[in-house]
Amino acid sequence: MASALAKGFVSQNAIQADQLFAFDISEQARDTFQQQTGGTILESHAQLLQRSSIIFLAVKPQVLPDVAADLASGLSEDQLVVSIAAGVTLSQLECLLRQHQQVIRIMPNTPALVGAGAAGMSCATAVTKQKRDYVLQLMKTVGVCHEVEESLLDAVTGLSGSGPAYIFQVIEALSDGGVKEGLPRAVATELAAQTVLGAAKMVLETGEHPGSLKDAVASPAGTTIAAIAALERGGLRAAVIDAVQTAANRSRELSQS
Image (cartoon, rainbow, N blue to C red; front, side, top):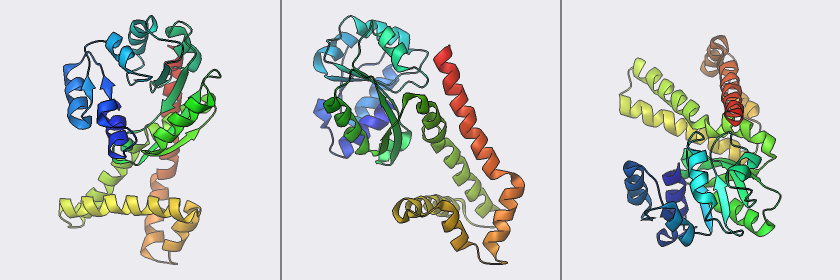
């Protein structure tokens, strides 16, 4: 996720590659970050703190306590810490950073890599409007970002944070259907992906309710309404709603562990 965000920032000219610095104990992660972003890999968290005014904590929730402990002693009052760790609350983050109050939580998703991300953001009360606005605008360079109450970030996690995985499965299933009907795999996958892209673009650009757009495609006694009936029999909508709730509940569990 760190590489996806950073590459998105650079490709959208929000940040120059020479302004990016990173540290990770994983050699593979370091190599990936450098190759994808052109940023500079440093040798320690201490070096990272010396070179950065904003620090993104792009680590798993289980790893965050150790990373935060390593950073806490070197943080200055003015340095901003942005965490993308699912389930770790602002108060928990402040505690892990020894009461450092300049903290923001963001739940992004991987399409930020191609400038089409969807994210939610919540800020600690001590964060200045200038810093809040800067991070919000930075995230908007790689997609959509909404500032929400922290209590809603679990819902963001379940919807857009994990959502790309749901849609990848939908694209794969559409492609499988095309292949079953005789289309070559490459053709079926491209048609499936473009169909999802086009449908999403229509929702965003027309502002119409998805149900209205669906109705416009579904002619009486036609092929589409027959297919929609099949999706209803298969419980597609209920399964997707359940997936969002399940991921959101898992995010809540992480905050309590």
